[in-house]
Length: 272
Image (cartoon, rainbow, N blue to C red; front, side, top):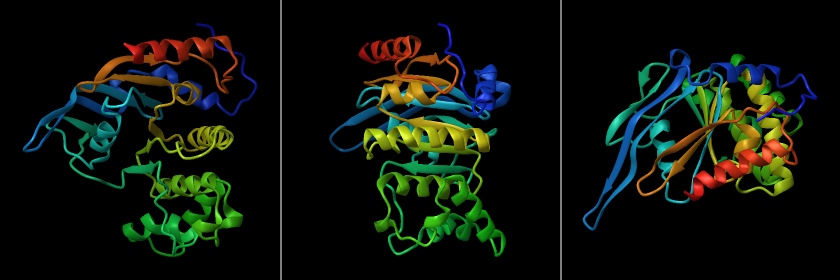
């Protein structure tokens, strides 16, 4: 498939990441034969079955698949919120054994503290790390500038739109300088216009910071808009069906023929 013409230099750094896809010597994340089984008195559910893939340093990877394919379970295993029954996840060569500040997490629910201002919400992780002044305030200011919320630093969550709340969540996740940004359907609660704006902002943040991003979504067009590669999962039990390289220059246009071909390819894989 041929790529579309570039109309911005903003994404030159991002496109260079694609040259390193699948190179395990540069892998930031290794998901190695991960199986997750949930057991109760009534039933045993195999949520994930020998899931394996890698995410290279600085790469943007999306996870897609039908309901029940284990996307969120896999996200929680990578985040250290769930332990795999078999297999392991390695981050920068170290086995994940629990949550850690090396992973910044953004969820569909904003999770902001309503009694804290924007700057106080962004500072939370830094406080937990024991960061001291003036370094803490300087870092918060940097993150607020990055997400375009400097003028709202003294506002409370109730005074913000949904898109602004999610930008606060991204700033809070990045403030502790994690190895990887994990996002579980972070834009699912906002309207379509706001979602497109957040796509542009997230890609801008990604190219600026060079962070590795693993992004879970049920929206195939969102995945094709954002990702270097799309991991397509299949259900019952959750497993990797196929990994699709998105070989299209950024910024990507949904009206482009090649964009539509990728969308149809991934939808077909999900349908399988």
